[in-house]
Length: 337
Image (spheres, rainbow, N blue to C red):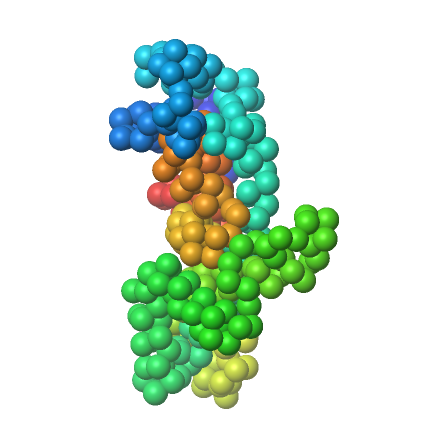
């Protein structure tokens, strides 16, 4: 009874966040364990990937020493337990392919990826919102049909194909932008300017943002159509309001929040698209590190990225849920979120 009373005294918002965190932790453990098992049962030999081209010159004794050094000679469950204990103490381990602490690699690569993803996130939100508003305000016209066709085409376009097309047109044919990488090739780190980084960022960011436009535009269009068909909009029209003034006074506040919430909930898709875009443009972010870790059997790095990206996607979904939970009183009453 005391426990029940104690729980009831906790504010609903705090309980909501705590339940979400507990779900995230259980999900994180399951994802890490499954990823660990998949890596251990993959045909990739981590020792061979670690040694590289000198594999023929390595004796069985040396191979055994390498396995003992990285703990690869122990049973799978023991390896996972040791890794989990180290993570709980704040140590994500050392990358086998980069020979550096995983935490350092994550910090360095995430900085590059977050700039790319945030740029694409903001651009897709703004462009998608504007297109959705125009399409809804011009419902049934040729403008609406063109925007819908554009969005449906983008929704079915693979990220890597769009990236290759952007490279072909703007880098190869027109020569406006560099053909990949995050900085100019052959330039020392201290000599790289901000404009150099921006020039290498533009094409990957535009590729990601173009593909992210479709969901926001179509969602905003439908929401605004529903708003324009409501009774209070009919009353506003009867008072003589129309056009942009009608949208500004009565439509904007009802559709801006759902569009932003949709973008927060799409963090998983954003990161997935970033992986493909970074591969196409050879952009040094988390996506490229994920592919390298998977193909070369770097378990500590891959699991570190799994933890990092799970928390990243969870944060986006939590923000989206909180926005609805706080703003929409119906979710508080029903407790459905």
